[in-house]
Length: 498
Image (tube, rainbow, N blue to C red; front, side):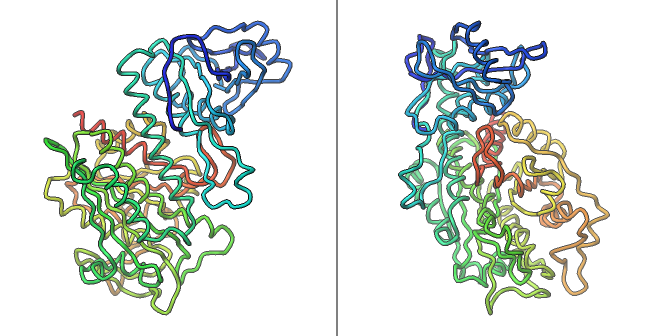
């Protein structure tokens, strides 16, 4: 979405979005229009005739009297004070429903800046489409809503204006993450991914914005001992890369490292995946996209915190040079890994980057890895809830606060020590797979082996939520979702404020 304005004046747009909730009594409805007054009696009669319920994700359209069109977006149960995520999703659902329109006004119940920010985020997140590769059918597609006006009594507040500006930045970089995830592997390779972010850093100002990019190519990875990244990528005609984006603003007192899994396509290698559903494996670089976009947003917002973002990029393919089951790779730092399953490749590329990130000149206050790592995550938590594992409960609690404020659903999962023995190898320091039961936790334990106990660490498994193959909902489209980006940004903000 190109622009979001604030207003406390009369509605001037020809489309107005308001909320609709389920009333306290059975079969009753409540219109929630914030600072905008409506003729509720006649509207409720019409809404009841249409069978509107006010349920979340429900959109009801009526002709307006002072506007061309009234859009009622479902809020669920009526509340005295609506949660920010309820407002974010309601705004997103309305924004999605208005594809083909130029602009709309929105008036939802907002009594705090956080609620106005959520509405702004929902509007920009919902206004998304990926049509880059459409040819003859592109003309038939309706373009996303391009502008919005939020009506609120806090329209003239400097803090509110800053929150809306931040929301537009969030929308911009979420679009970038989604676009990358949705781009087919014929057009997105480890090299093109890395070059695209190098260009983005240059566009932001490069060193003038306190940003620096380093890209290691396949020869540097091989000669530098990055056995995980190089070993996974060696079977592909599109060679691996390690992208490093550093943001070092003056007087930064704290530093975080973000590590992202960047498998631009995952066939499973010689542990070949079934054909059904393999097309979704273009999304196996979602973690790399999230961490790389997060550092750009952090730099654009000029947050006073240093960040290292590492994207471990490879394509997991089959060829005469691909990794075979039982091959042994020496990881960056010297640990040897017996590759029993070439489809458990994400943990290999992540391990190299995790170790490299610890060579930071400035002491790290925390390290976070983000990966579409295991199918076991989807089995355990489904397609809308991501997992978070840790070696530091305080760091996890801080992250969960950030995720909740960002509107992203993460659930804490354990790292049971008894599962660690299943990763033992008879010929190497460790195997890349262990017990099948609790596979998500075993993968977390594998990564934990590359983290010193004193360094606060989070492992985010986003396998299910990263790519939506079901129906769109709220502000979430089909395809790439952009999960983890907003939580990383909010975590950086919270950390920089301490």
